[in-house]
Image (cartoon, rainbow, N blue to C red; front, top):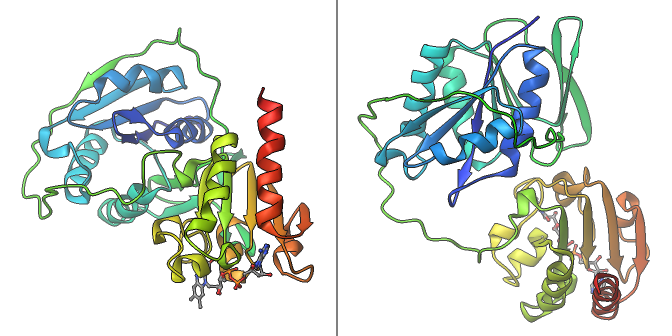
Amino acid sequence: MARKVLVLGEVRDGSLRNVSFEAVAAAKTIAEGGEVVGLLIGSSVSALANELIAYGADRVVTVEDEKLAVYTSDGYAQAVLAVVGEEQPEGLVFGHTALGKDLAPKLAAKLNAGLVSDATALEAVGGNIVFTRPIYSGKAFEKKIVTDGILFATIRPNNILPLEKDAARTGEVKAVSVPITDLRTIIKDVVRKTAAGVDLSEAKVIIAGGRGVKSEEGFKPLQELADVLGGAVGASRGACDAEYCDYSLQIGQTGKVVTPDLYIACGISGAIQHLAGMSNSKVIVAINKDPEANIFKVADYGIVGDLFEVVPLLTEEFKKLKV
Ligand code: FAD
């Protein structure tokens, strides 16, 4: 059953986030041969439209307004609703990012649509789209179909492969003018907590530290390893609570949910609340002094040892591989 699917391209610091391309791939599956329409919202985003097309969108609609320069759920909701009204898509796909998590439920309520949130996989089966999503903090997965109304889903970053980029693809780019009114939130300033670098939720490699790192200083060897591997540093809540690092690095049930290709857990015991945020990582390496630590139960590779000896050794070896 061919569908028209609208997919939100998420822009950060003037670039499209990787999850946007993954969302286009998901939209292609949902479209089942129908049309994938990219949507870009912001103050000057039209230059990014061709990149969305190169990754598989058939055409792109842009909504530009100075009031949309910084995300607000009010402003973006007005823009998306106007485009949904005009395009009448049968499907809607966002990334399951901070923005997607904030915006999608609000829009689902306004559109009277069910929302499949945090999908990690999807496939077309006999006219239905079957979504897979984790439940009970990642301990089980459920499969869901939407039987009524607009097919609305948010997809977890790093789980759905983007289509191969084809710079030769072309498609229409249409600017739509939407009057943005009555914003209840005005963003005056954005104060970033973490330094610029690899975004934790999209990182392919994460080096995470726990209470075993022992101090803020103790995170330095982890950062060095992350730098060599082009990855990001994350943390357990134990490390955040002990003030070794900022809460923006927290991974787990009440922190970020991540699915990198490689997750190296250093001095983390493996509490169930931590596992909820990282157990779907593709390869998990655990470094812990305690051979009985729970983290070894989910690890693909375990190193029983002192992280302050093991991590610098790994950094040295990876450096040699890079030369
Ligand atoms: P610990 O459990 O103290 O483990 C430290 C580990 O370091 C130990 O295994 C020890 O053997 C090892 N170690 C020590 N020194 C070294 C060394 N030199 N080299 C190698 N290994 C060493 N936690 C999260 O992480 N994320 C969450 O989102 C989260 N949400 C929560 C929500 C709720 C409602 C609750 C109740 C708890 C939550 N927690 C969360 C907390 C969680 O239960 C654990 O307390 C926390 O994950 C423990 O952090 P840790 O593994 O760093 O510390």
